[in-house]
Length: 229
View: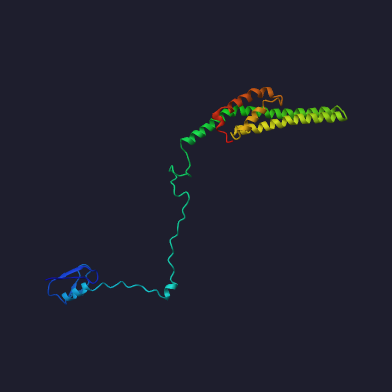
């Protein structure tokens, strides 16, 4: 009866013919030479429990061994859990059809207001300049007459207050028209066009129809929705 046993090196199953007990044989897998066990030795090896693997004891030298570095923990970014192109990402930029529609509507509103705002700004600037020139000429004329007394002071104060008030109104109108041009403050835009309706300068007849045109554009709902405030 042939004898079967495991190789002591590679655990390959070796079969030798009967009567080879005590002889030496070569493992066909790892070529290790080893004695052939007898039938009683083979049974004893099968019945004996396997030896536990030797455990390594820590010694004094282990205290001086460099510690293995722990893997660095990657911090989660608040933006990393979302895909930049996903619709569930609240931080993803929106370049969809809605953004294009809003941009085109805003540009259209600016184009509608551009012409009346520009003309009113030019007329308001001319009105400020004409008022300043008229004030200076009036003051020079009063002083040049050589008049003295309280009447001169009253005249100078009257001219200064009147033209100063008109210049201040036109300056505020310029500020409101700039707000209308940039689509910022809807209320100040209305104030700018309304003030240019007032007879604050010699340019009043020219600014009257342009101011009405600008207010008609402001009354458009599509234009009103584009203002930021």
